[in-house]
Length: 438
Image (cartoon, rainbow, N blue to C red; front, side, top):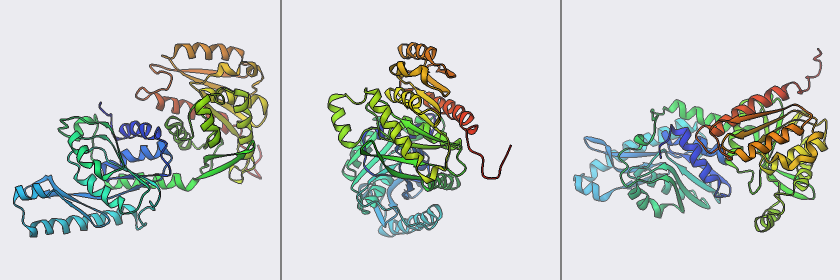
């Protein structure tokens, strides 16, 4: 496995982590390269992003050879066997530790800008780096993070030497690694692009993450007699709000929907990602599968959530759209037909729109169907469904993509198509500010 760049590695790692159902995740990137990977992981998980600074202790005349590491929190980890082999004195070790500890403190102050370290008590802390060769800096970081009392501690990396992972196993509750060769050679050899990451770029990544946290909040939606968990993000000057209806067996943590939501946010659109089913319903549906294909039930639940959002002061009368995937797309079309005038557009990503067959002629808003070219059966079903629509419908085919758009760049293409299409549709529906007249 090779990665195009750190962002690509982060997206792939984020998809793997999103499937674990992690509770209250906090993502901690190791500066500098690990932060570029961690940004995409945090985006996929909808989790806060911060840093944890760890520095290698280089050997004399061989600074690339690590004899240990220093991490924030006063953690010092030494490879005593290597120290003895090189014949380093205690004075030499102490001097290197002091020097790197000063650099750790400087970086913490510079990159975190005086903010306190993140609160990790009872949370799932995920330490991210762009790769692990020997494990020294990762070990020191894990020990520093462990001292902050997280409920669970994970190390997640795209690439690592198998031997290094074995040595790190006692330091983490779980390790997630996409590729662990016996012969790593060099971390950069596993990337097509592995340019150095500057402090300025790290600061920009943290600022972007802080901005996302500032406009977003976790919400509890009271709908249809149950409570549903979700996340609402409404950036300043938003053109509209897109309500996501995930597919069968999925959740608000779906990395695919989160990637699309991030693209919509960059295009000036608000998003609401939530679970269509309550926790009890999820447990029942996991055994029977009866609710995920009950399109009428899902559509009523979606309409109830939309009605709840309409009462939320943060949306300020903005127009709404639905973004559905799999069976959620059928539910979105049925809900749009049932509530004419409030929903401005519907997007389907790999959706079972054929399951909304009876409602399709009654949908009165524009729709966009996005399907992978390799998903031939679904493509045929989407074409048939489009033929039943009276409202304008556009079918976009992503070449070389399968049902879940897992191929490199496929999901990014979906996000781009959806963001541009929705921006055009919703900007025309945005209410004019008071006092503005044509």
